[in-house]
Image (cartoon, rainbow, N blue to C red; front, side):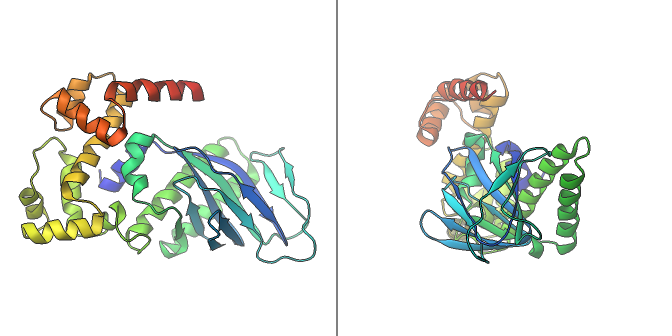
Length: 310
C-alpha cells in the first residue's frame, strides 16, 4: 500500500453529507466553528460562490472545486451574483438529503456541504500537513474522471435509489483523496507531508519509514534510500517536510501507535515494541510529549468519546 493510502486509512475518515444547496442571487449562510476531529467540506457541483472566513479572507469556488477546513474554522457561503433583495432560505427534507434553496428556476451554485469525522491521533500527521484552507480544483486532476464522479453524484442524488447515500458518501471520500493527491503536485503549503510525498527522491524514505517503523533508522540509512548524501538529504528533508527527520519518524510512530491503541486490545508494551521502542517507559514518555496524555489514558479517553457519539 502506498503511503498516502495508508495515511488516509489510518485517519479513519468518515464522510457525512449534511445538505445540498441550490442557491441563486443574494445569499449569506454562516457556518459556526466545529470541534477538533470534524472537518467541514464543500464540493461545487456547478456554478460558483464565495467563501468568506472569519479572518476576512475570501475564496471563490467554481464548478469542480473542493474546499476542506481541517481546523473547522467558521466561514460563510455568499452569493457572487446578488440580484435584488436577499430571498429567505427554505429547507425541504423529503428527499435523501436536506435541500436548501432560496428561489425558483436555475441556481447560480449547486453544492454539497458535509464533513469528515476522523481519529484525531492517527490523523494528525496527514491533517497537520494541510493548510487551514485546503482548496483544490479537481478539474485539474482529471477532467474526465471528475465529470464521471460528479455525474454520479448528480444521478444518485436526483434518483434516490436504494444505496444512493452510501454511494454518494464513498464518492466524496474518493474526491477527498483526489484533492489530496492533486495537492501533492501544487504549492498549497510551503512545507509539509504533501510536499514530502510529492518529491520523487525524498518520498522513498517516507515509504521506507512507513513500511518498517520499528527499525532503528538513521539519517544515513534514509539518505541511501533517497540516493543522496547525508547532509543534502537532511537539509532537503527539512525544507520539504517542515520538520527534522527525527521528528517525522516520531510522528509516524505516534500515529501508528494511536491507531493500534484504539483498534486493538494489545498491551501498551506490545505496541511500544511494534513501533520501535525498546521499553514501555520510553514509548510512554514520547507519546505523552506528542499527545499530552499517557497511552493508557489516550485509549480510555478516545473509547469514551466514541461511545458518547454512538
